[in-house]
Length: 80
Image (cartoon, rainbow, N blue to C red):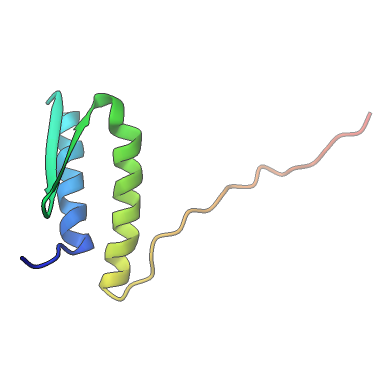
């Protein structure tokens, strides 16, 4: 059996997130022989895995991976 690509894994993870968002209590997805079940409480972990798969998929396609930047709020301190 051929190994699953990051882009295929990304599609499965997004489908699992959509299933949960549409009200399904538990969504199960398989990666090769491994199976993972996600429920409502696992959305943070599911979103983290999606971000990881998005980076890996972009690299597979020869693109730059998405980056996250912090927004500066000025940072000026007022001294009394």
